[in-house]
Image 1 (cartoon, one colour):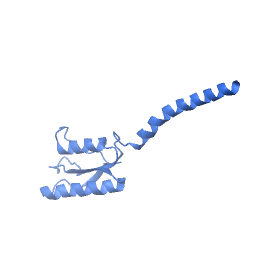
Image 2 (cartoon, rainbow, N blue to C red):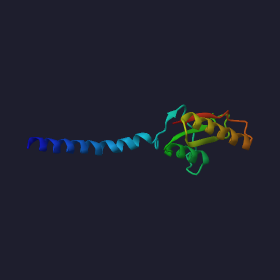
Image 3 (cartoon, helix red, strand yellow):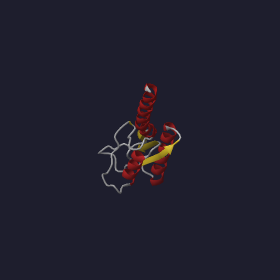
Image 4 (cartoon, rainbow, N blue to C red):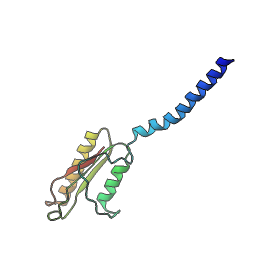
Length: 124
């Protein structure tokens, strides 16, 4: 009789632990909402309709390896801020490479010479 109660108690405890452990496993794999490794804080206009603000918000919301690249802002010399992002890449390194490529392509498209070169601001 005691062995029967011991088994029921053990099964109940293990079932309770399993219920609490499963949500933790799923959330550990997602990077959504995480700002990742910040190398410098990007300057954003504050306008939610700005392309760079949209790109940065998408970067933060992305659930996989992602990166955000931008030209650094210097108050005297920077007239434009150019940015690029890549979301949900195979690895953090691949995301950084593709974000840099996007930023450089945007800079070349607009033929901007001020503001400095593209740099990775944040990646995860």
